[in-house]
Length: 433
Ligand code: AMP
Ligand code: MG
Image 1 (cartoon, protein in one colour):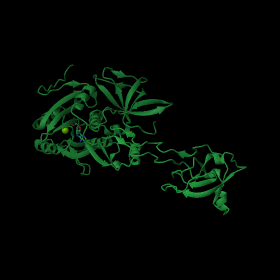
Image 2 (tube, rainbow, N blue to C red):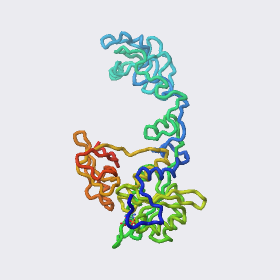
Image 3 (cartoon, rainbow, N blue to C red):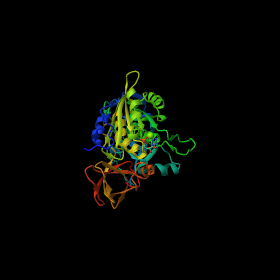
Image 4 (cartoon, protein in one colour):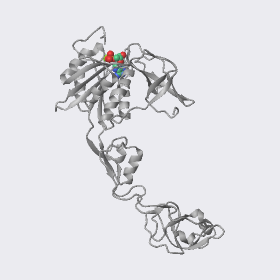
């Protein structure tokens, strides 16, 4: 591999594939420790205990309908023309227990979810009785006409149909989606043990940066990287810790890095391209070790990765993203997201990948893997990818227009229009799928 003209011999700089860079980075992360929290606060986190049931769900045989609990043999010959009249000996609502037993010739009024009384083996829904007409006519409700024969077991939901006492219902390692949160609630869990969320310290660097909200100034730009990265951290289940902006000087960098040591990972942006190497390297070297890598990808070739050592000896991994806003986001998607997922116990989580027909070529000038910002649509059942236009890595609005990254492999000088391209979806918009 030929090196670039301006070589930085005093850095351990290697040209790494995306996979090699990812593997090296993930080697520094482990699944985090366990926290116990209210179930609703645990959405998206990974279960750190087996959830078993102390009881049956439903707890007892219960009615699937509002109707009458009967003995099926009593109503065998019932029809609209020759209904069977039963005497109504009681009523049972959801949440209460029946006090009577159904015997031949009798029925008990029963509501959905109410326990089936002893003696009854089936439920006749109201619509198969004269319940409504009888009530409207002001006739006695002590009797009911059954107009339909039912099978034994009809409209009875058996005890333990959903969950049996002692069942392992959710296994350690399960990701808690809304349905799992509901299942935990049904088991009576109020709090749950999950893998803790990583705290991700986020730091932007540069003398040119303004805080959004600051007055606009000539020669300055607003810091967008802190925000796009923090929003991504939130999306993937981490907790961002906003450190703000470090200026391009030792004192400022040092102060901010100290704050970054309170985290599970520090993510910085900028200062890893050639011009800024020295200062950042010197500062980071005081706190730990750092490697500057060239990753065989476009955008986001320059990447820094290292480990900071906190005063208490704890090691805090540091991911240094490139400064250009698109590069920062694309590098975060490939490396930062994977690190967060690993800490959360979601190893191997991928963004959805699809195959699309490419509507215009992707050029690959220098043997890197190209992640082209693309707009994916579905036409006549086929995915199509077109590019967002100019692919310069400073054009952040192009990222806002894209819903996927179309990938041209590193060994291919061009991916032609009409060829099938792999796309890493950034989003999964409903209007497309
Ligand atoms: P650098 O790596 O410091 O040379 O930065 C590369 C480019 O990214 C420059 O044009 C910077 O102005 C820009 N940049 C760096 N940090 C940010 C940021 N936090 N938000 C937006 N642009 C940035
Ligand atoms: Mg800079």
